[in-house]
Image (cartoon, rainbow, N blue to C red):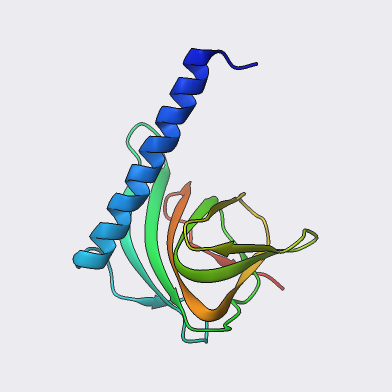
Length: 148
């Protein structure tokens, strides 16, 4: 069982992560940081890297923060990442699909974590979706690999 101090530390970390997510969303909405838009697939999904930097104290690891805009009813091709991926739904909804696992519908305010190497896809809902995506993986590796 967690003692009170451990629970408070966990609550503080959750609060810190929420504040970080809000900051990244605000920066992405009001600034022109990062790189040109990079399409995720042949669909009209647009992704813009807001930040791509090495992580201090974690040799060979980098963080990539992106904002992705999904039109209504678009499904990404099956793919996987060489590191962890965490996404936060700003607007709309997206269904997270993972091979061999049940689909998870996420809506505004939800966040999910996808483990490295997990083959997955996403499908936006009727209203489309806006996401902030965090990836932590080995620096210099591609952001994603298409799966067969």
